[in-house]
Length: 320
Image 1: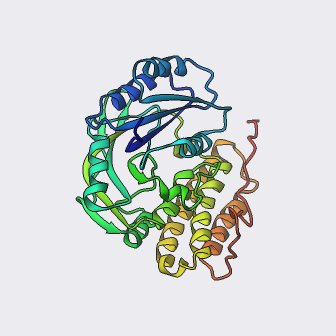
Image 2: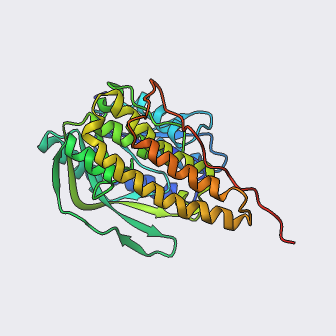
Image 3: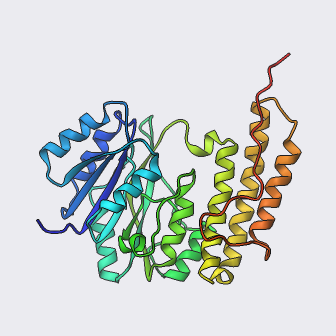
């Protein structure tokens, strides 16, 4: 059996309402030389019965069963078992355009690029589909340019799912997704650091299904802390590679952004819980974490860095 050119990694957990459309969009790709790794992350619903229907009829679809470990753990499980030269990650509640694989693969091959990226649309439960605005047309960047743009969150974002990666970017450098929220931010930058060239197409090829309860709309202290820590992981990695100075401006811009977003999230958490006892502590901590991120006092660690202080989760007070 020949080695597939592309490995498609699909983590599966509680998506029985969506997975059929997702897998159907993969099966109908205009590019056919791929394998699909269906990672059962211990889902308790009927998602795997639907996945099995595809695996029974199409030899490119393969089921892998594992204990529940979350999205990052499922992606890492897939990376370790993928055989293709290139990888893509598709969330099992989303779906893709029929030319998603072909366009991304050919962009990599024709331009000798390690990563290709596409535009995406947001699909709402109402049936409305909205394309995310283009800030720039088709672009080819060297690795350093791409990483700077990515960290600054300009026209290149950290999402795992609208990109195709050369598999060795992960395997040769021991890069895996950390078990945390905002794992894409913490990982994509580290992967892109090792890319020789990145192509950004202006084609809309990925459909992100907007469900209620998304990370940004359900922020709590754990998510706020992980949001900050994702940038600590990036700085830590760059500093260990002796390349932080080249991206100092980008890290500073990213830090200002998370500091501002976190101010809103902190205030919202205290309002929702009717508890303002530690709001000043949380606001001061948010500022301190930003200042430490961009300071010369930042100390790199050999593993994943921890925050020197964490945002406190306000406990809900009852109305009197």
